[in-house]
Image (cartoon, rainbow, N blue to C red):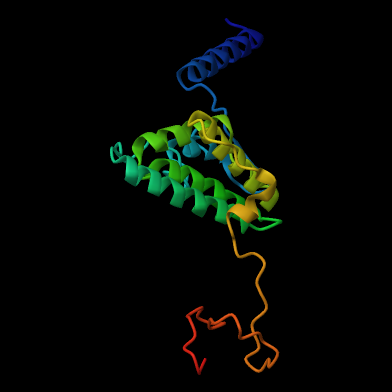
Length: 209
């Protein structure tokens, strides 16, 4: 007869073999439960679900290729360029002295969108190259305006034009930052000899205002 010890030994060996087979067929999961939140992390848990779903806020269409075609009319191109530089310089000269993160992001986005939607396609391509080489500086009004002036001078150098004096941008582009005090209509000391209406600038008719 088989002794009691032998029977116990056989039972233990059989149990170990059974556990080994189960572990081989169904390997242990690497997931675990967060004791504070109860969330399941690891295989099949939160980490896996994050990989399956795209971000809630994907990158917007700010960065991308130029949209507009080439502008062949040289006169239209020059007129458009002057107007655009005036717009951009005035914008940076009126930019906040201490911008918030949202305001800084807005200005950077505007420049990049301009580089895509600018009506002159070849000009937009050059602008994109300049933005890539010299990223926008938006930490303050001074940094933004001087950065744009530097960028403008890069274009002027290529076109063999004289550079702008970046120290006197406000003289070249009147941003209206210094508001003139309103004129008092009851000011009897106003000089009327100039022959023009102080409000409309229209020429005076002799004998009246």
